[in-house]
Length: 523
Ligand code: MSP
Image (cartoon, rainbow, N blue to C red; front, side, top):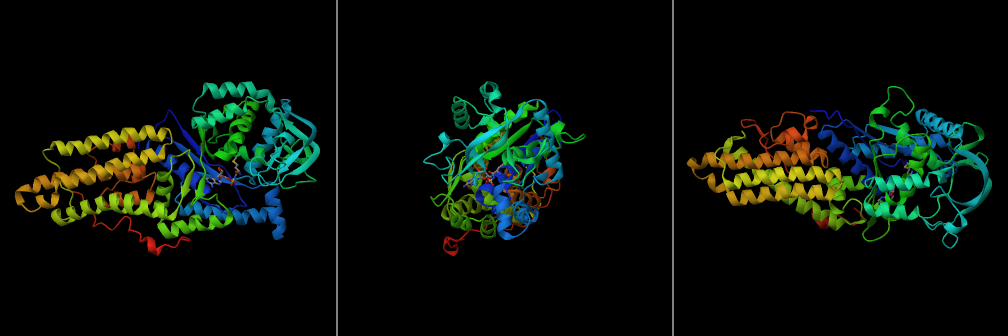
């Protein structure tokens, strides 16, 4: 592997509310983060990939009370559901941060104290409305028919003394930062949304809760009667998780190289609160905040009952991990809303995975086993058609690198499938089964099979970030002895890496076809 020592790559997911049952929305962001992390590692970057759980606030306190346990015990139990799902989904995070950990609390308190000492925090009376499910404050004018403007649920009236962060001071700086850095908020429609929002006046941010109302939070270091607001606490995970304020931590290497992947609903907190908080303590904002769209389920907004139908563990049991990862990334352009349905999932598996990729792989390997005793034949005397497959694969490789830079996962998969289709077309055109009939055509047969297997080696390498287990399986069956994860896309992505004389294994189907009638809609 050739490390890219100039630049580092840092990717994060939102930290999920520990109370929630992990659903397809959580899985979606985490898979997307995993894919870019794996891809960048294969490009030779030092990568840090962070995910975790958001464990403070009123919702958690309430849920623990209802169960009759203390909030920390409640969190310790709930967090396992996320951690075990990420294992099953093959998520390669470098760390998992919980906001109840001491390493996080220390950083939150350090930042609060720092802002206070700089005169960026002051105390004032607060009159407004609070939405518990969103953990957000709203003013009277924000409300829609008296309800939370985000989730349209009831809000509670609040009047109390609180601490405020002087967010309003940073309004013009923030606008300038967004205007100067056109990739800071991505995709561009989200950037326009925030620039539009910033045309109105930006208010200061209420960052505390009196302990008499909420105990389950991080204590404000300069006033023990208060805990800090859950969003102020949560956003800081992105720097506490890499050891901000601690010597010899990954922080100095990875900040501000961060790319925060989030859902579109939490755009304001990440592109307004977070950069201004960072500016307040003298840190540079992250490189990019990418907001993806939302999934509906068979045309409907996700509800608790629909969540069960697409519960990630059940999807994995039914379709397999890699098929789930593939579907979520292929079906919908990253950044847009999308719809999940079982028929669409089955269609993708049967057509893209079993038919196109699976068949190409097993056809090519079976012929090497049958005609060359499993030993990869050497190529000789390339013809135009052979060079065509090679050129197309090399072109796709370059395209994919640009597409991944923009997190255009569906396009990158589209480019990989161009190689798959070209491989199938190549086999049909060169008709190796016909070449096998005459001894004199053996060298030609060898060339055709070498070219096909080499395109499959590149496919395995390019697919590794998306479908790690499938790629590993392809890689070993192709007789590759080197560790797949130690490959470098630039060096090992060059045509000709497959070694003649190495033994391939008899193929086992990569993706069995799914009979739609055997899958109930409840999966
Ligand atoms: N705890 C906060 C994040 C703090 S980050 C400093 C939070 N947690 S959450 O668990 O409610 O949501 C996490 C993510 O799930 C959000 O990015 C949200 O967009 C995403 N999704 C929730 N429902 C979704 C869909 N139906 N589809 C896609 N993503 C969805 O917010």
